[in-house]
Length: 93
Image 1 (cartoon, rainbow, N blue to C red):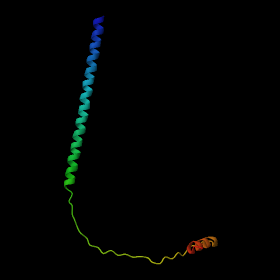
Image 2 (spheres, rainbow, N blue to C red; image 1 turned 120 degrees about the horizontal axis):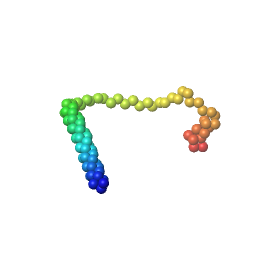
Image 3 (cartoon, rainbow, N blue to C red; image 1 turned 135 degrees about the vertical axis):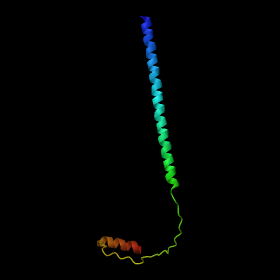
Image 4 (cartoon, rainbow, N blue to C red; image 1 turned 180 degrees about the vertical axis):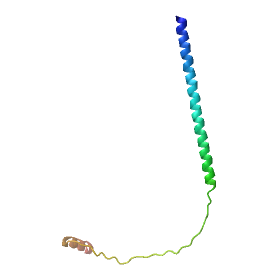
């Protein structure tokens, strides 16, 4: 009876070890696939970047400045009180 129990424990330990090893193999294969995909992506990006052609052109343009000197507010409507306050602010009185 104790031999059967001991054999059961040994079998359980062997199955646990086999599962642990298989899980490690699976993780390693996933990491390997990720590394391969990354390497392919890096190589593809490097190839496409190498195809880029840079050109340098100097363009001389004339700058035109227009300064508006007179501003007209057509629809500026203020009540008399606001106009009095504005005039006091402008004149300082």
